[in-house]
Image: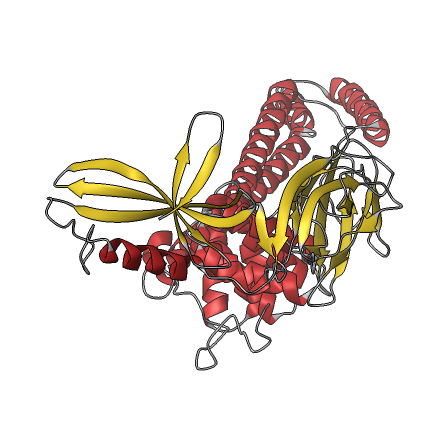
Length: 536
């Protein structure tokens, strides 16, 4: 389980500066490109000022042109009157008084007419249409220049706007704000850089943004950035451990569970060990069983348990375990998990059970000899989980009314018996019957080791072998091999084979016996149809 004293950063470290900013990676000098930025802005401001002055000059020029044209038009209004006056004076010198009088009357009449026309509107000179066209031309040129100036200004503003939203600009300002512990400023710029395609690949920038988010307590944003770092660099250990801790502290157990499973059997698996949850423990292991049964689980840490029996993967939406699960079908696959208080799930435990439609197999009597003593404990095996064995000692077929076998086994008194046993399942399925014949004698008997010693002593008395089991007068050694304990002619005997070993050659010398009760030695012989024991 996780150590509650675990911290993502060492206590001696400053959490606000866990990552070294590589200024060179962003094309910055020691002050994050401030000098270059100031130069660019100064140039742009100069261009803007020049364009503004150009616009003002053009507008003033247009005003002056319009004023000059208006003055020219006004002076042309009376140009015809001056010429007529001069001409009248010349004519008056060569004419008589009458003519002069008539001319004067005529001039007065013209003057009155001119005054009348002046009241109605200006008299246009013959040159007015040309000047008016020229006036309109200059106005059009001026307006065009003003429009072009505004277009240039708009272009410069657009370039400045684009530059202020470029990736390099955003990262430079964001990193500078971060180094000054201005985390709001860092988030302002770096979050915009993060939203670009370049930002989703820049691990250094993203880790700085994550740290700024963490300081500001924006956990959801911090988790989002760490997830993106791992998409760009799956084996980034710092991002992985930081993200796991955030998931754990914020009870994002399902996300942490997926993170643990994603990094299982990888080089970073050990970094997530502290968050792993142990699997639940089943009462019955996977296997084949004869009858239906109830399956139970325990969790050593008292975690919640969820399971499925349809083959699907268990999660927090699956059935919560609160009572035994009945296994009845022929084949059942159980998948189960434990979930801790942070909603972190264990690895899935998969169990498969097969309920056999056949009866149980025959039991086995766990005795190798057919001759037993009264202190021999007889046991029955191969019963199967949940099943019960019943037995008889008289050769009859056992059933539920017969003696019920227990794990302690049972003993028999002296005599001959035919043992029979059968297994019966909870549902009443009856298996095959096992049988074995035995003879039981009193408990006062020689052990096999004692019987072998007695046989060796007897063969030494007969000068067949010496005390080292070497043959007397012949090459080779005698080797004694236990065969079985049996009844021959009503005598309980240990049967022993004697082999003669001479170098690499081994030959069978014969079969001998030692009485279990009396310790007498016998030579075992057979005529093919009957085995007899002759005292030796």
